[in-house]
Length: 431
Image (cartoon, rainbow, N blue to C red; front, top):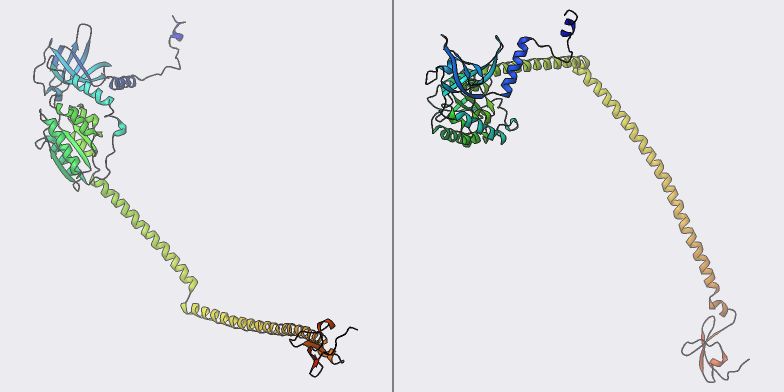
């Protein structure tokens, strides 16, 4: 046996080593996620009621049993006295009693078997609406950070209204509260709740709605499991906080609302930050603003001191500027005189060049004209007449250059160097 003991205690590194309490807590979390809430039917066995008002018993059938605990709040609303051997229907949540490591059912409500199937209806409607996406986290909206007005949908006579108003008055007395009254229990309650919500939607005078009611049995809270009410909540244009019953109570309205609060008072606490928080924020912002202003003033004062030390006396600054201006004026006068001299010199050169160009342009035409006149004069018939020749023409002024143009007795005119002579042809003959 001693040789085998090391192998028995050899640890597999792939298996997690749990502390007992942690293992029990993990089992309890798994039960919560997998089964709760649950409804179960069976026979009471070993029923006892402690002085505290809590009840303890087992629920069994022919093949098994489970330990049950029903605390004073739930047992105080029973309308019958449970006894051993009685068949009942329980609604509750599975958990682990860690002190003993026992599985137990925390009973939230109990009724005698055969009283109805409300919980089955609840589960059926829950499955239907969940499949349609009415419980989806994607469609849920965040709550306003600083609501200007808060709406409350509940009965005017409900204790929940007093709890909510008291909490709001204590936390946010500066925010207006609008009540939309409706019954929260009975056959007409679901319709009145829908009407109150629709009125709030239409008026749009609040930024968030609280749908609240105190605790009770499933029958008392049944108005909040109405399908039409659930759809009205899902279609809300305003964020809705559901605070129906106590922490262990769940209704269809809780799943459809944007936020579920465990109690009406908790709903009031969720809808807005306390006034003191915002006053603290304002104080912090005021302090930051004051510090920022002081830093800016200090920086500006330092810049002013530096500028003053650089500038010195204003009269010295003016004197320097005047001297600088006089120097600039003198430089400007010199520049003007130099520029004027340059322009005058250039203008003289241009005038001389223009005269030369004009002389050249007029001399050449005169020479050409003289040559043309000389050539014209050389071609003049008067030079020919001066050498003893005459120019004959008919009475009509036609030049006679050939003998054949003249006939006997014809009147002709001879143009000489200094005049004209009228002649008559005696007898033309060829040479």
